[in-house]
Image 1: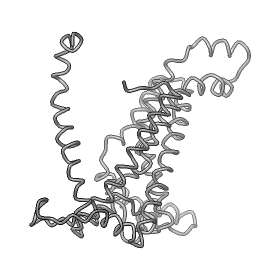
Image 2: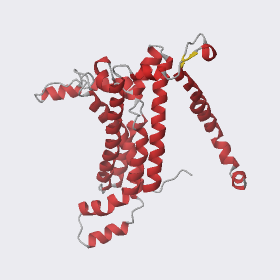
Image 3: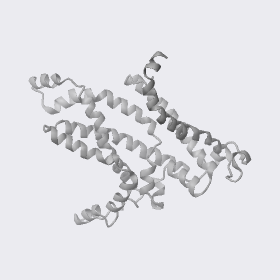
Length: 296
């Protein structure tokens, strides 16, 4: 209580944010009761009939439900892996840049896409990756067949992953660049005196110095194994690629918003939330065990 009183001004500063989180993050949790009801908007919660687990049985008996779960995990895992590997490579390359101004300018340029919404980027990519777009014009000029990036079900998942990595990789490098500042510069000087080249220094000094933050971010990212990116896929996908591009979030959107099946849609959302909660808890356990990271 003494510490709380000393920091009362700081607590008052975060109070508006906490109220917003409470209202938009926790109050809607009570709506999960719809997963166990045959909800009718005209009847409301009090008048709608309880059906137990029938909505879950109905959803997972749909012919494409298993494929949707697989698509979600497949896309999310690829994003997690490349979202870790690509920023590390970019960070190592930028760390070798001798010109400080060039390094700062390049870092600013590559993390700018992070601040652009997928509504804006979706329109850009729809034009850039279309059959008549600039990218296919280059491919055709090189003598190859044009690629339908957003309409070919085999290509679409990779298009989603690579465009997401392009958007977020630059921002992730900020974390890794910060980790590099904790490495003792004298280690590089000693290695240089022993005749080590830049590749040896990177392998034996830079990467080990970054390893704790890599382990931490890698373990924490396990909580996103069912988050494949609703906004991105919603702006880029079409019925042509539902087989490989439809994920739990877009599936829920169509069930709940377009088809007004509120009970089944809530059941899908509750299933995703339950699995995500388990994975997040497991990821924090791993982060505490291997990276000594704790919230409390």
